[in-house]
Image 1 (cartoon, rainbow, N blue to C red):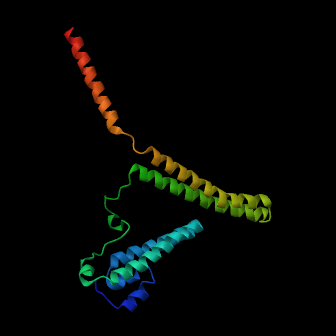
Image 2 (cartoon, rainbow, N blue to C red):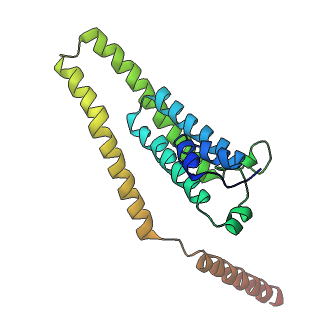
Image 3 (tube, rainbow, N blue to C red):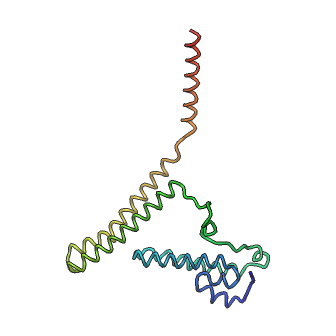
Length: 196
């Protein structure tokens, strides 16, 4: 049951992602935020990619301010607010969850990169244990993969994105009009040949 409650307790509960929402009766929102936060923490823990710590931190801050903003709404706006799952969780189990071909490719590339990075961490850990950290080749390999390779990959991605923006959309209408004109000319030529 949605209900405005003590702002002090809302502040205290909102320190835990999703708990402030649940305190006000927005159970679906609260569960979504709590699960999202836990999943992101799990991703950071399993992959060992420290750059991913930005994701749970961003969700934590969002959850805190979202709960307090909801608590500060006037009564009419508060009552009009619906409790619904976030992040597309309401579509789970239904046939509405569809990813287009581009989305599948992006997800596939991201998963491959994360998998390769995880494998690199394991292999490098074994090499470091075997050869020792003081080995200059091991140090050079480590810093190259952790510092240089991501910078190069991001640089290439930015250049590619810039090129895509410069190209813009292809003019599809011109191509289809040309095809129509060609088919009209072919039909007229057939009619001329049948007459003669």
